Amino acid sequence: MIHKGVLFVTIAVLWAHDPEADSPHWKTYLRGGLVNIDQNSLGLATYFRIKRTTNYTFGDVRLYAHIFETDQDIRVRYKSSRIPIRLPWLYNFTTVSYQRNTLVDVKLRYHYNQGLGWFIRKTDSGNMTAEMGIAYDMSDYLEDTRKTTYLKSAFTYDKSVRNIDAKLELDYFYQISDEVNEKNQSRFQILGELYWNIYQNLKLIGGMYQELPSDKSYNEQRVLLYFTLGFNKPLEWNY
Image (tube, rainbow, N blue to C red):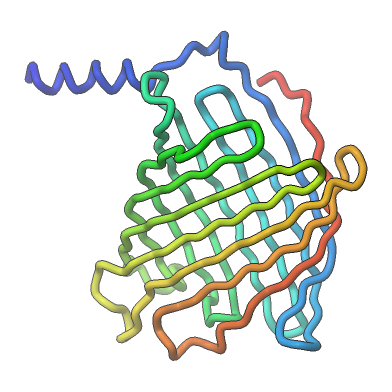
């Protein structure tokens, strides 16, 4: 019992923060443009994001929507993170997402993951992080309640140089539970973006996204290439 009490106090001290010195800041992002797969297949690319940050917490909601004549890649993701006041190079995170991606035969995927992250580098001009955690998802969960469990690893890198910003996100999900319908659900996801700051809060953004399933029975692994005009603005919210 004493050991449990010591553990609880230790965690409380590490992850504590001062609410008065840790006021939140809100920001919203909007994008619109074109997306391409293969050689002649054009579609509509849209993006919405709202972000809340303090000195020790981070939370955001993102919506990617790439719409073609017969295919869709739609991703909605919420992620929250907290930095312990005594260990500023670490953070814990929780992510919940929904995805429909007919390019790789995903009709509807509900996904959840959580774990620990490490700030490899954190500067005014760029950040580099690594994450490890546990994850699960349910494909077509409205008709099937079986969960698929993974070990999740991730790497992110962003860099700013004058009017140019770059971002790279790599996520790998290694399946550790039994295969469902004799399919391995392990996958590797790549997101890369390049930003050109053209005027105040306006940016031109070029990006690519690809999901690489381990199971080769999926559709051809096509790369999404998009070009959008983006706008961002701080929000004067006090709550």
